[in-house]
Length: 501
Image (tube, rainbow, N blue to C red; front, side, top):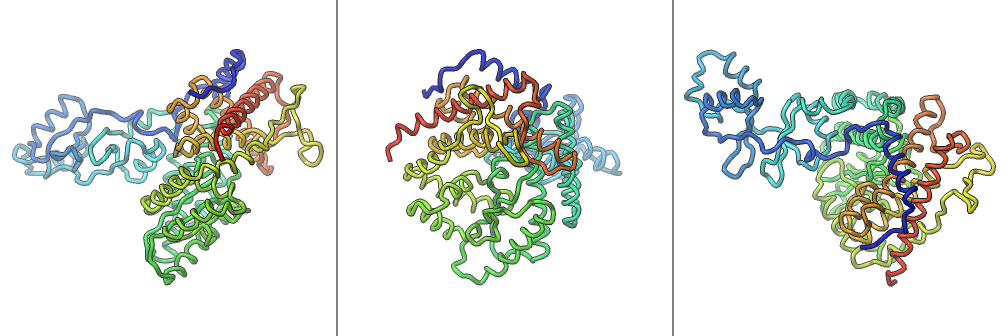
C-alpha cells in the first residue's frame, strides 16, 4: 500500500472539521447513485397471477405498486394504486376475479440503472409524469424508487429547471435558465448546501441544457444519417462545472467509409456550437468543440488519431490526454463512445511513458504559500493582492489525482470519485484519501463562493479571493488545505520516480 506523507494529526482534524462546516449540514448529493436509496427487494408477481388476489395482497401489505416480472426476473409491467383506481374501480363491468395481471398492468415500465444519479431520476420522474421508477441491472429487476422517496430528500428544487428544460422549444428559454444558475448557486450556498453538491447540481443542469440543445439542433438540421455520440469533457466531463464553464465537447460517429455524410454533421455541429454560445457557453479558446473536425470523427478515425497522438508525442499532447480521459457521453450511442474510450485506455496501458508528459506539467505547479507561510498573491493588475483559488490550488488536485488514477487504470472522471477509487484499490490509505478529499472540498467551497458572489453582484465571475478579507480561521484552513495539496503532489512525484521511461 502506498502511503502519503506523514500526517499531522492536528491538520487532519482541522480538515475534517472544515469539511463539515462550509456546508453547515448534510444534504443529498445530486450526483449520488440510486443504489443507495432504492427499495429492495421489490414486491413482484407474474403476468398470469390473478388481479383480485394481487390487489388484495397490495392492500394488506400497504404497498402502492407491484412489479410484474417474467420467469427471468425481467420487468414486463407494473400495477400501481392509480392503475387500480383508473382501470378497475372507475371502470364498469370489470370482473377482476377472472383477470390476469397482464390484462390490467401498465406494460413496458420506465426503467433506469441503479448506477444512474438521483438527478437523473428527478429528471425522468418529472418528464414522464410517473411516480414509480424501476431500477434494472443486467436486465433483471434490482430495486424501485418512488417520487415520494425523492421528495423526502433535501432540496429537490432542480425539478423546476428540469421541467423547463424538457419543455423548452427554443434556445431563448435555455438561455434564461442558464442565466439563473448563479443566483441558484448563491442561494444553495447560503442555505448550507456543500459546494460539491452545488457544483454537481450546476453540472447536471448544464448537461440537460447541452442535451436539449442537441435535440433542437437535430430538429433544425434533420434526422442524422448515422448513429453518433456527443460527449463532453473538461469540467463538464468531470461533473465539476463552475459558473464560467465554456464549451468542451466532441463527437464520435459510426463508421461509414464515405464522406457523403460530412455535410450533415458539419451543419449539425455548427448549429449546436452557435446555439450553445447564444445560451451563454463561450467558445472554447482551444477550439475543443465538435464543430472542429479534430474533435468530430468516425470511430475508426478516432482510433487512428488517438494512436497517432501516442506514437508521435504530438504538441499539445497534455491537453489532448486530459480531455480524452475526462470525457463522458451525454447524447446518442454510448456504445460508440465506449469503444473509443476502451481503445484509449488500452493504449495507455502500453504507453506508460505518456504519463511522464502529464507529470512534467503537473510538477511545474507550486502552491501559493511561501516558506514563511504567507500567501503568494498577484503583484499588480486588477487582482493585486489576490490569488486565484482555482488556478493556484484546485486545479493542482484535479491534475494530481487524474495522473494517479490513470496510472492505476481507474476510469472514473470526477476528482472525488477518483480519490475514493484510489483508496478502494489500496493505493492511497483511507486517512490520506479523506485528507485530500477534504482539501479539495475546501478549495472548491472558496472557488464557487467567489464566483457566485461576484455573479450575483453583477460582476464578471472569477475565482480570485483576497486572503486578507478572510477571517484568521479561514486563512488558517486555506493554508492547511494547500498544505495537503502539496503532500498530494509529493505523492505523485514519488510514484513516478519508480516508473521507468
